[in-house]
Image (cartoon, rainbow, N blue to C red; front, side, top):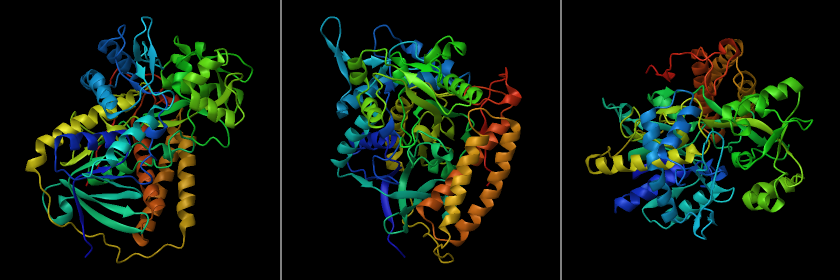
Length: 535
């Protein structure tokens, strides 16, 4: 029997949500032991790639009520107003916490010569309220929080460890379904570990890699959503996948996002002939909500048979562009595009999972002892379409809520001394890895073709047929061979794809990010799509 690791808190995911929760906990509980697991390097998650910033009410001309209204409008009727108000109200305090952690937000001098934080504006916002660090906010946050985590001896950072499955009371013959730990694959020695924990937090991010084209990093394979579903958590609103309107279109520009702030600062979307078109789709033009902009681009590309459209901010002064978007400018220049002189080619790509694991205000899931924070969770904040830069705000606010809830229950919670070992006595090493690679490619391609920006019932039914066949193939493979990182990710992607397809088939209307030609109108009845697994 192998030795089992124990931590008071097991955080699965090393993005803004997981790191901020861990750092808050060590501030309040002196002797706590925390493990933060990252399936790759600590910086490999989506937070690192967040360019725009964090939406928060800081300007004198802005208000909490305005931020709430903008979020509700973007969410197309499906936001939970109580959760929206709860989240927005905590924004200033959470930003103050990040500033105290050392995040160097961009500053400027106001008209009176006072140094203030620079705020930009993005799609769906009626005011400038996006605080940022130039055009690389996520990187600055991650670099700061990781550095701080390294300084705490109570926090152990475990890279290249991927979640295989969660362990609850039923695994050891108890009537309780409480989560007590996890099976985790150490990718470097190919061994599955058992980790016991009083509290388990899923902060694994979204599932953008279920699509062929995505702005997400390679690690975004829906691991948390899939494992939570398998253990019995409700999953909600998975049909609402946000496609970011503007990813750089270039064979060497893998998943490179062109920040919404480029449009916020005056960038115009152009057809290949140089004509503007967004005014034909929405009164706010380029600053319309993301679902509108993505569908407009998709429509024009299909109408013209074009591979891309173009984003042009070259009418602005060159020093304005290079100072506001230094990283985007440099990267585009490396690929031959000078955005101070010419438009840059862009296409929509899968960007954000608005649905996820159902949680309450404390980030608690349906399973006692299991929390979900960040993109992996469904809190009710985003509704049918996430407003730009509300995602990092959600990470911070619900990490704080989870922290408070854990503190409240910390001294009254225990777990058993041992949990069941991982059983691989009846499996062998695979000599058919090509099967995994083939299934991965097939899944991502039919999800893009059949479950993309514009959907039909027939396309969704085709996708459902394919995912049912893939499920059986993957399960047979999983049952006979030792687990690998690629197999775990493929298994999880198949679960998430099925959840997206099933949810999309259940929604007989078009709303927010879910647009179907067969039900083009929006129903008067407003309801979430909540899936419940029969165990």
